[in-house]
Length: 333
Image (cartoon, rainbow, N blue to C red; front, side, top):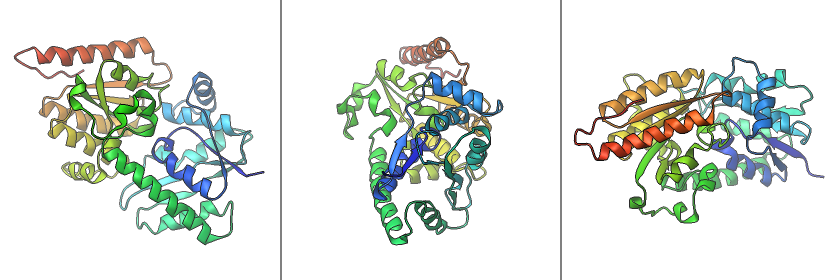
């Protein structure tokens, strides 16, 4: 019987799942995913996790709890740094230890440290450390990762060409997956901004992307923007952004705002997120300078769908109202 590795459907799952899945498949390891977030997973995570944690971390605990009796290992890498001189959010650094001390009866956790702060050469060490749980053949491990990484880069390039990220595919018809889409078929183009684990988790954001799509809105996310472009615009900040995901969020938003490529920005933030408290202020100021409407939606485990629906409808109605108003005042809410 094949060894089973569990991958919780939360946090960095939305960024790197395709890479991890292909890597483990190449090592002949069976990958078991937790289901999409639901009420049971959320409730379990809230009960298992400390109260002070943000919603995505609580949800992640629920996904781990779902997997614990179904697999031999659970893959929770410790992300410290993904680029030289930059860091990940502190909750990514401590995630394996939080889970280990919050949930009983866990199988072995693969908590490989990913720290590229000084050099990318440490990635090879992390890959070998992970692969050795399943084989002692380093060449096989590196070959499995190289093939998986090549496929992952193809996927990333498709996103940069306009193909929507994997977790938004279900919101769109197949014709919308083409890179040469008809931009005139949408009434508005809105940047859905925020960390991937908020933007792509349909349950905690209450199907926000689908709600926009039903209003004939083209949804854009920063994952669909070339990384080098996002980094170029992030450099316009007075001080260097040393959070990797902050670079993507701020730089991607700045590029679209300055090019007038969007009609509005919806920033989706988890209550209590320290990084968002800085990032959303930077984006709001840039949007105001360029007269791009901006609104903030804050979510936690108590957020009601009715209130969120009202905010979205009001924002879209305001965008449409601006088209017919001569003064064309920007809206902020």
